[in-house]
Length: 71
Length: 138
Image 1: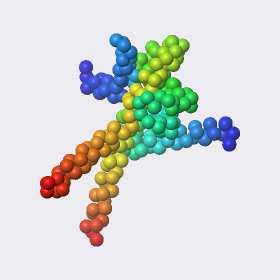
Image 2: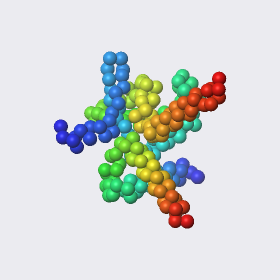
Image 3: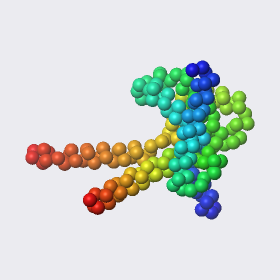
Image 4: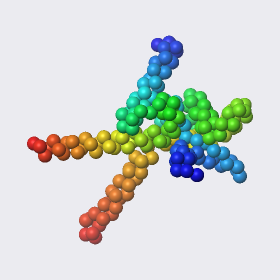
């Protein structure tokens, strides 16, 4: 791969990562404009993602418990 | 001061770095800088063999090339006027790089909560080991 292609693929990866985080935050907290999202401090974003993940784990566990009770 | 202003002040708080008697603000980076910060952490994990003084030895050119713009951004986010004199800013970062770089990873810490949980678990394990029956038999 030539340097230009590497640069292009890196830029795509970066955009994908940011849109993934943006999507994850919006699916939990609702609409967040791109400008607003880009201006959020990193520690805040990471803490929010960690809370979202923790909630996800709790929900999964609760769902599994309900499924076991039904059986 | 109203609540929103107070919240804004504590959102992405800057950290003070001491230079002798003087203090300088460094603000956390913004989410648009996440890819660069990830790259920085990636290089850091590849390059670090140890802590403290060993850490300085393994600094490489690629890592400093990623870190310098991030430090620059962090200083500008804390005080916009800093960006007006780019030459002084560049010289300042170059001469204080080793002092500023650890601050960069400190204020943009990814997993503070996770580390705290790990520490709590370790404390519990230590406590359990100390209170184990083997000790009580003695």
